[in-house]
Image: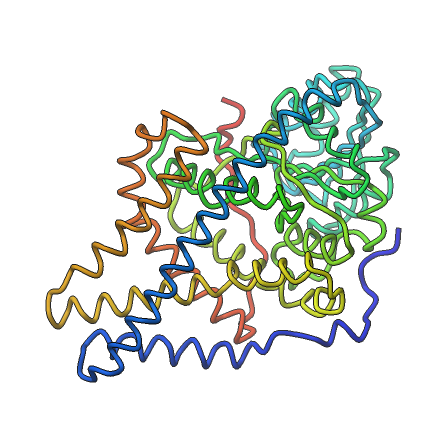
Length: 442
């Protein structure tokens, strides 16, 4: 497998980041001034702009709800059709200093009820007891299908590519070392590959440590902002991010695009790989029952570090692959570009502009009508998504949803804008990892 390092003319086609920065700053300034109502015409223009954006958000949510409904119907049909499909799968799990969680992760892989797989563990230069723990598991359980590889530290993408080069399966599952898979994860995910246009299957990620207010808020966010959107995009075969905790790939598809990008300035290798698969014409779908439980940050600083990296990484995936999507010229590629532009920065920038408008209006007039209307709209749309995802249990989440919308959501909105600006300014950032609490072992 050739690594993703060749440069072509399409790599030179990029988004104009400096122009995006200037336009966003101007929009923020105009929004704040409009909120103060010193210039009635400007206030009127911005109100109309925000009204149009609100309509766009409503239409987006209606489309996502419809696509979720269609996804559910198609999933039932697929379950009935391919019950006895068991091709060989290679599970690749990279790790760097994961002694707190690696045992639970490996044991969950060994416990899969799927009859035909191997496990490839890659230690990426750990300085703790990670590799010793895995070797002990292999010796204790007499596991012949567990291959242990060690390498000098090269980063997660490098470790994943090492695993891919040793994989024997027609299909490859890439799993994070801080994740525990449901017992039937492989069984549920592999059925989608009977459709030969499917290049990858995105799993369903859940928060394992929901014993803390911050992690409960993240769990709700995963439900509404990640899993719900993935289900909707799955109907079109256009899932834009295969989550790191669990993704299942057709080995040919991942080899055709040169594996994972090992550029250490890239901060979301899973998003980059997903977009390159889509640009290469492959369909990416989602599977609700291919579940990975993962540790969520329990401290606000760790959460902000993680989301800062995610936001920059998702924008990088669009920016680096923009040319490949443009050159593709297909309807699916065009939809992918529009969706990524919308999700990676447009919604963030417009939402923050509305926040500035509301703050200015409140400071000058103590006006809360616009704020209440906007928050009620967002809560209503998210509650519809909750009803789709959880049924009658949606009411159980409602108090948490109210709290999330007036606190957590605004904190992440500000942090997301900061991450975008620093990405557009090419500010240096280190690739760090969240400290593990070891809750997966409890």
